[in-house]
Image (cartoon, rainbow, N blue to C red):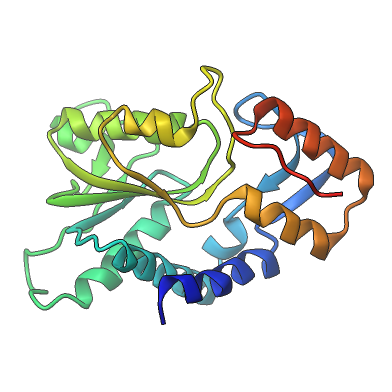
Length: 229
């Protein structure tokens, strides 16, 4: 089955497990923006069965891009489990799988205050051709910081993959994809808000006022406008 065929199943996984949802009253995001909608991958990352399915989708997506990484690295802490399990499953399926061939890397949420610089940010340093994984991307601040840290240690990042792009402009007017491209790394999103929000709105039916708030939000912050009603 091709990724285009699997993509519909992947989107169903997102919608059926309430990864996209709505706030009755707008809440302030980490970015400081007031939003009537959210993307939260916790429902899947906390469930072994669902996380197993998710990592299979990640691997299928990577294969569809023709990428051949040596290591998957998940941004702490939201994508830590995603990175570890994806790397484990990927390595186990490779023909050259064996002792010392594939590294299992995990980032520290808070830098270690002493020791080797490689140990400052990582438990198991990412080696070889790296794919960096993130769950949700709004302005991309965390992912760009992680890319710069890795690049300063001469790590070869071949791609950044996000589970969901919120399709928002940063304060500098750039999209997340544009900002990441300035680090000389290719960005790919497995899903995006412009496609997911209409599906979630149709399923949950949160009301016209929320729809209007979201449409206004995208006029102000979005890479493109969205129409829900």
